[in-house]
Length: 308
DNA sequence: TTCCGACAGTGGGGTCGCAAT
DNA sequence: ATTGCGACCCCACTATCGGAA
Image (cartoon, rainbow, N blue to C red):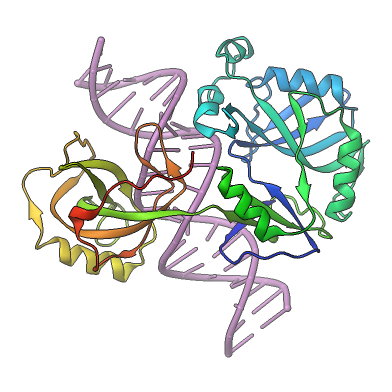
């Protein structure tokens, strides 16, 4: 089951609200033989997180299938960037030697004591889950609220969380399906960025591949990464036409920008861009194009501070 | 008939591992 | 030693199509 992004937030007593965790999705299978962990794409992760496998073996009964998220922390925030140090490592000894502690937050149960419970309402499954596992670290029960979704979201964003997941309280678990019974309420960040280049399109793509965007720091145009989604075909072609009058030989960026198929533009256009956060390398994470800001002077575009 | 969910295809940042340079 | 590439994680979004409503 995966959640659908929405910006129409609501409070409804028939829904529950959980913290949106920034880690990797994990399906737990605890049988008589032992414990297995699988990724969202059904890739085995059992040996990548040996401490979680051990904990599940000791703190749960056989005949369990549960759903959750593996996370690492940076301070009080769940941090995908921190977790990334562990992602590709399948040797259990090396994995633990990395020294990044991980936790498994469980939020749903599909099979309990060998019995399929997916058809029970979500609230009932959560009650069963809470009693099915001994929740001491590194295993944690993903808490939820039963009301006040909108207020909870405001508090969540204030606290620097990624957002919330809203789930219909009476809905069954539908394996592998995208569903409007699970909704993502994300804390949104957006700001203006200067368009100072673009990359070539590939395949069937029209116009261009991605925008190369930046912001001013003093008089330097700092590179903030690429924006390659959010355009329809008409916009791709219309923007490309405007680029043709703005072409220039040299990169306007103060930072070295090594992107394949890059073309430079005089920094005269300003785009509104949505994104989730700034990465450690000062790039946009999950960027998408929202529109042109004809009203904004490029020289006024600076990096706006977002939470944390 | 219209609408929705699933899929394919484009694009992003970052990490790891491996092959080519 | 460095570079480039694909395969993974995390994703956003558009276009298309077939079946559900």
